[in-house]
Length: 358
Ligand SMILES: *Cc1c(COP(=O)(O)O)cnc(C)c1O
Image (cartoon, rainbow, N blue to C red):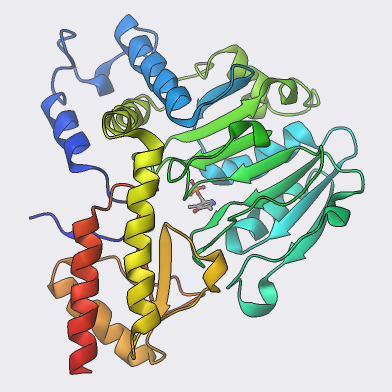
């Protein structure tokens, strides 16, 4: 039996996608082999990769002057790759520090130049998105970096900072495809696939073409966006099965109304859960209302022992991976696109029951 999986990542995938992959596991179409066994240079695989890219472009409305790259190394490798490729003119970048992933990105950028932290929400354990104004971004900098959705703390940018004509770089690992965005607001969007797209091992980079080709010669070949863009992500063997699975997810999203439809469902799922938390006498959310994430919902009882009991009893009901990150404690429900509304309903029903007994 499949459980109700609230994992923050790798996370739940649409059941229809898993079934399709199962059906094609041994032989993909007429190829007589599994996608895992195919050359990445074969016509069959090229068609899979081309369709995956095309469908992602359709889903996100990616403009012509942006490249889509299918890379490895996770979002964590982008923490290094972005500064290596972009910190070229001023050798300076501006960051908004909204948590653990921002900090890791900052630490890597510092290896390539100067980092200015324009705003931070560390004073309250990252329970909100800090306010910014245009003046904070007035000085020279090669780019401005944000973590769009903060997986651990459950916050998200509901409005982009006013950065003027600076290049915006966004880590969208835990919110890509959860709501409509305007790609042209960004210079680079990157995301590890394992939260809202597919299995781990694939990293998606969407990059404006003028940001490619500026890295110093000393930058390792594989870490230069130009290498990856010139070779259409096939400079070396790409994560073929991950690309195939992501392609199945893109196809599934397009068949189910695209990002706009997902966003409507995501809003409903999150609203139900937050409404319950706001009215509960036992559980409460940990994030300021206006900055709440649609994807990751941390909550606590205020009593660590009770939290433990809740997590253990939930597991007995098949509600799993609900334990919060250690830096927030309590619980966290990650409710990505692939979490069906019935999963959220089941969680709320169990919380109600637990609250009545507590
Ligand atoms: C999970 C996550 C990361 C790290 O991703 P990896 O693919 O494991 O490197 C970075 N940023 C955010 C926002 C995340 O949620």
